[in-house]
Image (cartoon, rainbow, N blue to C red):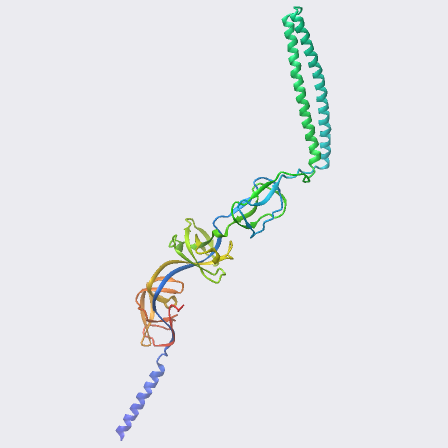
Length: 406
């Protein structure tokens, strides 16, 4: 009887110790579990891009002049050779009171010079007529032997000189007439007003079939040589410029596939890399960090009807396909963590966490390609916390597959 009591007390003590040990045992760590999966894998690098035209034509004023009102507006279709705008000569500047009085005096002086030249012409003509008659008399007397040859030659020389003087006087009258007309034009034309009569016009025509993209000038007025008036282009030549980080740009080559989204249409678009420009530039990021960017030019594939509504300077999300595999073991990037010099995950084995070193391959967004260390169908902890370590008991709250379906 006494022996049985000792056995019962011993069992009670062992049970109490077991309850104490069970109460002191760490509780299972709740985790979210994802299941690795063997599926096609594509590595993408994404960046925001802007649409632009491969060729833009700026129609400007070839010379200084007076621009007539520009009728075409942005978005208007234009044909090759269609007149876009017209120019005419600038109106003469108006004269101030002092200059106007001076111009009147110049006109009076020009009129007086013309009258003086005309009087001089009449005098020279009289002298020329007398010299011609004198020469005629000397020639008749020379034929009769009454005057010497020297005297006849002297009379002929005088006649020729008077004829030359007459021609010079005629030219002087003509020059005086031109000066008079010029002085009169200063008063008649230089009023600061455009003349009512017909003016010579210069018509500027469209260099292509396309659309008016931008109108720099709309209203009539004076315009300088080389000043831009209209930008013309064809939206069929629309392309996209994406400024990639230089580390990603070196992996991009012409002919690569580009996935285009976020442009506002219902369907996604595809494109092809046409050129990776050889020169980069520095751009400050939103965090204030200097980044080296390289422009990558992308052609949009398909029928232009598919991207109706896209214009110049529109925002587009571009994703470049850098690498593709038909079968690859994939896990979310959130399941990986640094372990020594490499990477590791916590694999689930009999409700316990097992530290599993892995070799990380390529990454695409939130998905990582695992080249060694995991098989398809393995369960790993997503977002492992600091409470996890090798051998810790787990409580699985949820299990999902990766990558997500669809």
